[in-house]
Amino acid sequence: MLQGKKILLGVTGSIAAYKTPELVRQLVQQGASVKVIITAAAKDFVSPLVLATVSKNEALQTFTSEDHSTWNNHVELGLWCDIFLVAPLSANTLAKFANGNCDNLLTAVFLSCRNTVMVAPAMDVDMFKHASTQKNLEIIAKNNIKIIGPESGELASGLTGKGRMTEPEDIVQEVINYFNPSLPLRNKMAVVTTGPTQEALDPVRFIGNHSSGKMGVAVANCLAAKGASVILISGPSVSLGNLNKSIKVIHVTSAADMLKACKQTQPDANIMVMAAAVADFKPEGFSEQKIKKKSSEGLNIQLVPTEDIAAEMGKLKKEGQLLVGFALETNDETQHAERKLKNKNLDFIVLNKLEETNQVFGSDFNRITIIDKNLVTTPFEKKSKDAVASDIVEKIITLVQ
Ligand code: CTP
Image (cartoon, rainbow, N blue to C red; front, side, top):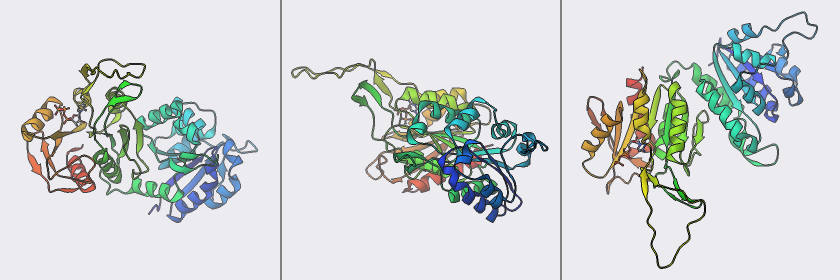
């Protein structure tokens, strides 16, 4: 599957580096030529000799060979590879990538590389969750770097959580997918919003809705399966257990957070799918303290509108960018959907009608109608949300440039 493909593997200082000989072995088994660059910190976890043996190439460590007679030309290495795969990617090297630091051979190759870069982060759960790491991941995702994982599970520290490097066989599968020319969205970047938003009233209460986020997750998975690099902007309490490992998730709570994440990712997106059930109203003020119950009195909450994220994305839409919205209606559905299509500058809208026979929230099934810019209306049968996502993505494929 990888015959004739050139993979440059960068190995950085994370315990998961011990899995890299197996990763190299599997890439070689698939027919790839593999060269390895290993950082000084990674040598504590895996031996350069083992990597040299399985890759059949010297494992490069510094800008020059040990006797200083040969220069390991970072520019040539960056040009040589079809993919520069960094696995595991430590929090430290991630920070260097995000900031353009260049203090070793691996980071110099990163800056020189004109071809695809894929990374598989691996670190302890709290390091991964840290705001700085999340910010750095956002920066590199925006620069079209494909992020694989990390996975949840038991970590070397004894803690449990997100931070495990994606298993070598899954990383190899991502590499194989990349080279599959039949994947129609191979070079596209997609942003999908999903789930509800929560608009806080006080530290313990919020205004929200019943959205499970399943539809957006299904669309994100389907876009990734067609080769797109996907960023999922997810509201709270969405189950992400079956999410494709290559999808980068940005967790948000309120409509304002979601808008901010959309604005950050929109400039680089080819496709934007607004599947979130954004709360339309938020409390005018936030009470820093829990609002106390006074037995004889009711409570009036003044609500103000939230930002309309899809409409905002419609205003910012770039030439060639595709913007897809959803409409959930109970009555006069076509009329409402067509109005939203126009007002939000969408390329097409996916209409869900909430009725006895189509309980959208939480269900694994959905019946949709797609209405495009020319008001061509295509109704679909009731199907699983995965099958509905596939219909939506097929429509995207016909329209994306
Ligand atoms: N949407 C959004 N931001 C909002 C409200 C909606 O991005 N504040 C997006 C949704 O993700 C969806 C589309 O706009 O893609 C339509 O959402 P919907 O709730 O059906 O419509 P609204 O515009 O909120 O209008 P209404 O609630 O009056 O039907």
